[in-house]
Image 1: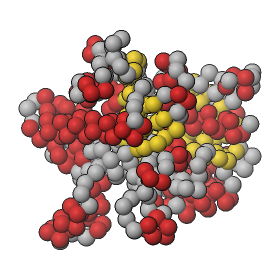
Image 2: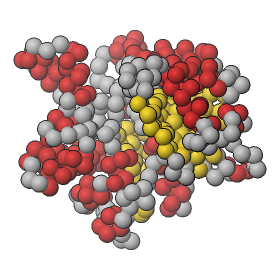
Image 3: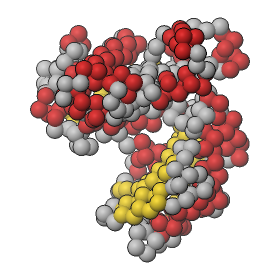
Length: 409
């Protein structure tokens, strides 16, 4: 279908993932879905650094001050056309820029072209994503200044995929006024990844996405599990913010809300400090005392560290519980997927989770599971398994590029 759209025209899409102090990018040739170049500008506003790599192995890195996102975009633009490190002759080869936006709330139910009004709306949602939306709005403005108004900008939202979740599932048991006045509800995140993986796994298995029930496990430093029925999200573990749900790298996930009140009273800490504890000092780091990186925790656990072992047991246990909840939400399951940095590379966790899903009739081939690491992916369920189980390397950037292409016509 994509080839029919673009024909013989070489269409290149620049995909941007901006944070408050970072700018990740990929330039993708949509004719063959090849990543021509990718890189990162980090510590924007501080003593910055630039990393750039091309499809044929050329790389550039430099530590330098990056004052703001406008400077970051200028650096990216120069690198893309650079005589030594570039992959295009001039910036006119870039057909459009696609931006990942964290929070679209109830305003944005699908990807869209950027207008002045859209920019204002994205920025207005900053209270729901204070570390992301304002910075991403600034990044869009900087992209327009750098590449010109004739280059169309498209925004793709992490939350849009979950806008099909029903009210009975997205509301909290707070007074209804909290939703009416402040829009406090479950929004869910990683929607771009869950959407990509659900479509990709159906392609792998030659199944119709509109007639299957999928539980998608996006596991990384930030993790979420999503129930996808007939191609639509019906439940997900993240909530108002990405803090909700599973134990993560540094995030606590689900806890009794009274824990916050009790800890603040006992330790005499303020809301700001409590927020830091929940988001930056909890999760695998908080339990293990070793690291927020799964690989480091696994290494420590294998060396006999009891707290590291406990952290891994907690994570596996919680994943199983959330999978079961998603199955209950759909009253069934046909396909189970694992993706994300941990989901694609930590076969030990995948095995640990699946070995305790006997109630679903789930069976995996351990040797096949071990062979899926490093971006290979594949079907890991046995022939007599009652559900299909797959490791699916996610590709959010490609999905953003595809949405961008479809919107620019």
